[in-house]
Amino acid sequence: MSQVLRIGTLVGGGDAVRVIPQIAPHGFESYSLTFWQTTGSTDLVETAKRVRELSDEYGFIISTVGIFGNPLTGAGNNADTLASWERLIDHAHLFGTDIVSGFTGRLTGESIDSSIPRYAEVFGELGKRAADKGVRIAFENCDMGGTWDSGDWNIAHNPTAWEKMFNAIPSDNIGLQWEPCHQMVSLIDPIPQLRKWVDKVFHVHGKDATIAWDIVKEYGIHGPKPFVWHRTPGFGDTNWTDIITILRQAGYQGTIDIEGWHDPVYRDELEMTGQVHGLNYLKQCRGGSFVPNPK
Image 1: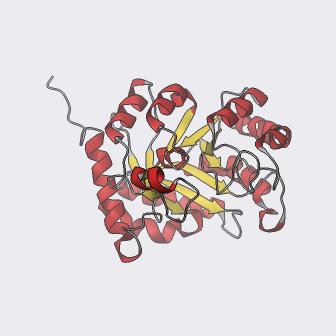
Image 2: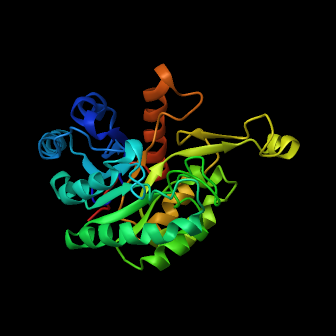
């Protein structure tokens, strides 16, 4: 499998032991384990042990473990987010991964520029902690409803912000958890962006988008009609063969893990129908299954 760019999906870290055996037979090759704001009561040592046993049985890998909250403020439900980052950095090796992913956080209601100093303070320390353990940090590029001027979760959703972030902490082990969808929502073309930033991409979320350009042209982006939808790969606008080509040309060694539960059509009882279609679609975009050359 080392010759193949693995295709997998996201699974809640607390549900991994229950969910993975149900969906592994569909052919997912990797899993990105996620936690929302806190790792909570999850026993990471025991979970890692059981997940590694499942890995031996089904032949998948754990690509990342992630914590998605606001570690810069620690306010409200984010009180444990920073500690959860530390916990996952310390336990990542038990899952067999060297990537911990999540949001940067931001100063609530303030601009990206205003949040950079606090980001540098928090992730300067987390980056050192991670480097000492051979771990890389990857920031998802989701705006979580924020803009340049204001927001509540994440500053890593715009390439100008990436430049400021990586200048503030010029570390080789801090990069991106990238997906085309979050850029397309801002009407950014993801293909040239990926070509420019690919060396900072540590992990890829398999999520696409459909942009309704007819609605944009008639109603704009602040009108009453939705103009863009998150999509499972295979149902959106992106050429994933191009994405995989760019990744491979750059020597990308990571995975593409589908981020489901967003598609407006393949949802509810059709969720896994859509995800398995996306899985098989992405496998075809990479060239299908590995075929050895004749000796």
